[in-house]
Image (cartoon, rainbow, N blue to C red; front, top):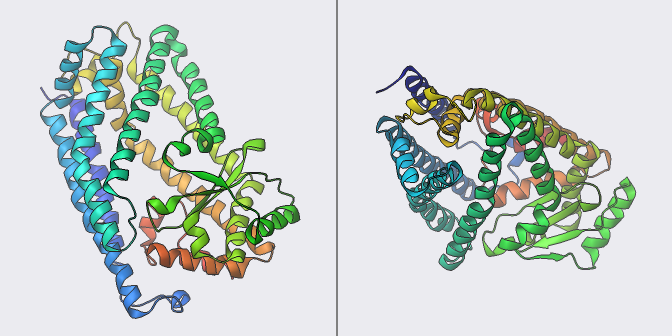
Amino acid sequence: MYTTLFWVIIAILVLDFALGAYLDYLNNSQVSEALPEEVKDLYDAEAYKKQQQYFLANKKFGMVSGLFSMAVMLLMFFLFGFAFVDNIARGCMENAIGVALVFFGILYFGNEILSMPFSLYHTFKIEERFGFNKMTPALFAADTVKGWLLTIVLGGALIALLMVIYQHTGGYFWLIAWGVMSFISLFMMMFYSNLIVPIFNKQTKLEDGELRRSIQEFCSKVGFQLDDLYVIDGSKRTTKANAYFTGLGSKKRIVLYDTLMNTLSTEEIVAVLSHEIGHYKHKHTLMMLMISILNSGVMLYLLSLALGTPEQGNVALAEALGSSYPSFHLGVIVFGILYTPVSTLLSVGLNCISRRNEYQADRFAKENGLAAPLSEALKKLSVSTLTNLNPHKAYVFFHHSHPTLIQRLRNLK
């Protein structure tokens, strides 16, 4: 029996999908043979044509995979697939935590199996066709298995912990869960590069030489204490270049992809890192962490209201999925859909803040005399990754955490 809440869920799913499809349509309409003035010195006609082909190939792939995912999701609701999986889990386990772990495990691996052909096609067809992929089938398989194991161990532990808190803390569930989630977020920010990254990549300290000396000289100039400079072997998976800043306080470190070192000059790499240091100087990392923690608190509070007490639960949430047994795991599924409009609005707000932060970090580099090399670095990175140069303004507003290349180049002038 399809309840009122069921149709509310379907409406949210369809409207969310329609919004995404419309934004994609607007973005696709921006495809043009005319090359933006700011980057005419980087692309010749053939290279720009390749960039447009890469953009269209990814958009077509995204449309097909998105339609498939939407179809599967709707079938799961209309055929009461979640209730079916719940019954299987209840047949395997008796206690609530065990049922939830089996339930989410079946959904996770079911999704992994269904999405595997798309992952393989994107990696070994699209990325391979445009010269980005460096992964072997063996490395792809190893990464997949490692990802599964991490999800089982860490995801399973987190679900079990949240359920224990839910079952034993009553009305304080959201508050205690918020404290736990906040600690985990802070811990991962501090130690992600030390604990998780080495499972997939090798990190080595940047050896002494011109690049290290130049970075250290700049750090000294702007009063930025940095002891940890690492290089990561990103080239074993892709030709795309990257760099990132992680950690806080004494645990902060800058990680350079080896592909970045092969793409940019020493001065350009220093300029990129000056941008990252600008984030730290303006306390953007800490600010975004605090916003994320506040967001999780609001979400957990609303979740606690939706779930009700462990003794009674919320029958309406279970019935929306075709089950008569209220439970934590079914409630989380329904709440996740109902929270989508809120999540979308928060995401748009966070993207606006993030884009403002990017401009500020760029200005930090500019104030330290690195506007020109940072501009050149941004151009080279855009070319090396075949970035879309002319996304639609609405698409940028909803989806981009960074300003477009053209916007950043204009800001740096």
